[in-house]
Image 1 (cartoon, one colour):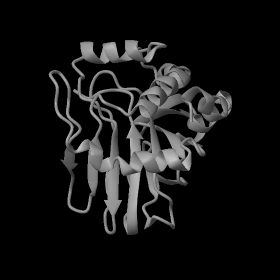
Image 2: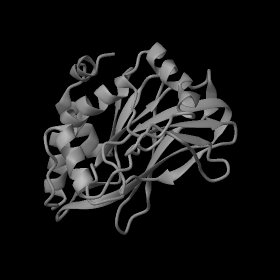
Image 3: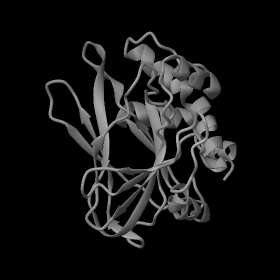
Length: 240
């Protein structure tokens, strides 16, 4: 689906309110089933990419035992995802900058994605982080967040490229939110084939009795009980 046509299906004010309340917002059917499966089927296609000067190859990234496989795209995102990332960045910038204000942070994000990437490069952040994950029976993704570097966009996108209960069982996408002097709050984010979710990448502002304060978030994928689960993480900022 065209990125702009997809975004126009959703009410930005409603999505913003959901992000404020929960730290995530589900965007149903962002990818048509054939688009989701085409991306999933391309998992192994990235194995043999060559590394041109100044580029990071899309290489196999081993993780802890039982952590499945990660495949980083490097700078060569598929055209569909490249268009999506630029369009979603422009759509989410108002939310991100509002969060910066509420959190008492001085950094403001530029309206255009290329200007944000330029700021990343000036800050020494050159390593793209967007990737696919493949989890098979017994695999899981441990809790993690993406907050490396000076330029950290507070939102990212995740998507499910396999069908629950058909391609795999288990493998729920989960988030935890850690508030000061309180127990961590667990959340299960319901995703179907082709669904995406906008999530807080590492922290977000929460309103308390004496104004807003920042809470930390992590996300993970629970253990896959059977089959194969392929997911996507689309991250706007690069890592050092």
